Image (tube, rainbow, N blue to C red):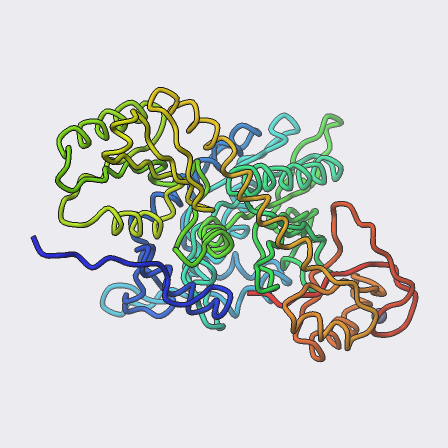
Amino acid sequence: MGKKKTPKGIGVKKEENFSEWYSELVKKAELADLRYNVKGFVCYRPWAAITIKKMFDLFEECLERKGHLPIVMPSLIPESNFKKEAEHVEGFTPEVFWVTEAGESEKFEEKLALRPTSETAIYPMYSYWIRSYNDLPFKRYQAGQVWRYEGKSTRPFLRAREFHWIEAHNVFASKKEALNQVKEDMETTKEMLTDEFGLSFIFFERPQWDKFSGAESTYAADALMDSGRVIQLPSTHFIGQGFAKVFDVKFKDKDGKEKYGYITCYGPAISRIFGAMIAIHGDDQGLVLPFKISPLQVVVVPIVYDEKKKEILSKAEKIGEMLSYSYRVKVDERDDISPGEKFNIWEMKGVPFRIEIGPKDLENNQAVIVRRYDGKKFFVGVKELEGKLRKLSEAYTKELRELHQQRFENLIEKCHSIDEVKKAINRGKIACAGFCSIDHDGEKCAEVIEKETGGKVRGCRLDKEDISFDKCIVCGKKAHKTVYIAKDY
Ligand SMILES: [Zn+2]
């Protein structure tokens, strides 16, 4: 057998050139292949596909636990459906892929949109499925792909023309219940992103000019990257009754009267969350994956040369078997590559723990656990191995999140002038400033900020807000809001 080429970390430092670092990571960790010959469309390779599948499973399980049922909708939407809601059409039309013909150039009478989002496919069906107050709340979700013609340059997982997501669409009898659903969606986001994927984020109420097309209000989670840029992760929308009126989503209430439902929708883009996760947790050795969703959780590497080869291999197998009842484990027994090369490979793949066993360890009946995210080594007796690993693994994802949290606490900077905002953003910070209004009145001021600084007004923080200002940073009128300004991906 010939020597295989082993990746030895990423050639570019993450701190120095994020873009190149990210591309190299995607390639070396074998996450995606960009050689597919349709621009903006990429192939997901097994390591990414397995991780993403596990992320879907966790999300779907959580939604079902909270009363959502799955549906599967067609991916084609007739143009006439699509055009029914004016704001929606305006917002999405530039991004739609249209299917216009089939077979030997048989033109369709009506263009069909490859769904960029499914409101206009789902709500017409809800008008058949919802009859009375007994059917409410009506909570459904679907998991699948959507397609958007992204004009901006694409980046695998983070921004692509085809992405994988979940969309939940719920109908309620009252506005109050609908707004409670928005809160539940934010809680779900926390349970998934924070608790399972180790990501810290801030939920913002988006300004009116930046909300989902057709919604009354939009709430979006922005995760912060080390570069100071933010990336939008799940968003939840209070749609109100607009779409219900257009698509006739009505129910007969207790008083016998027909009423329009209040709709909410929630859209966690799983492939994008995956991209953010690898970008945020990854380091110069490669991927760092949260414990629960890593395709492999533990890799056992026997350190064998000539001495005691048989005994070491047999010990490694025993350890592997013992751990396989609780974890996804692999014993890497390949003999055509050195232990050091194996370390590099599994570090690149982000496997949370490596267990090494060599001649000395065999003698002392011990093993070495190496933790991926910080490289820390733990020497433990074979008998204590399982208990120690349990403790370390239970804390792993929480520790990743704390690391992320610490890094971005210092990223926020209070600013009192546009010039300060500009400087803060250029130093990779997120600016925080006084602002007149996030209703339509404030749009002009936001345009000035974007033009002068390159940063976007992300909106108002929904969690604790303890920073306040006297004046709007642009027009000098009374500041009713504190907004955050950042560049985004
Ligand atoms: Zn203003």
